[in-house]
Image (tube, rainbow, N blue to C red; front, top):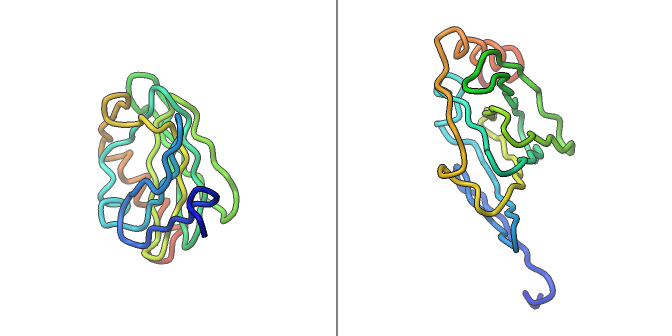
Length: 142
């Protein structure tokens, strides 16, 4: 197909990779990688200039939403359902875990980076919330 008419992109490797950038927005794929195992999540992030949309493509996943302004005060797990779009609002703390066969599509502003994002380290109790919720919801982590 002529790429001036239709771009077709995929990413099957581990981790995160933008696959389409256009104007002000980006589409990326995040596939399972060890850094997003529940016991490896040590902080949540928030984006100061964009919402971020997550769509589960395969496997299982949990989106963890943190409440708080300057840091994370409470964490809420949201089990991802395939085919549903989850829009994390600008300025909301979040992290995601995936099963070993998990993959999600991400849509965000093209300029999203560490420069316009913030990070909040989690205390041991908050980290345990992530581990326990993952054990309860994702067979890989039982």
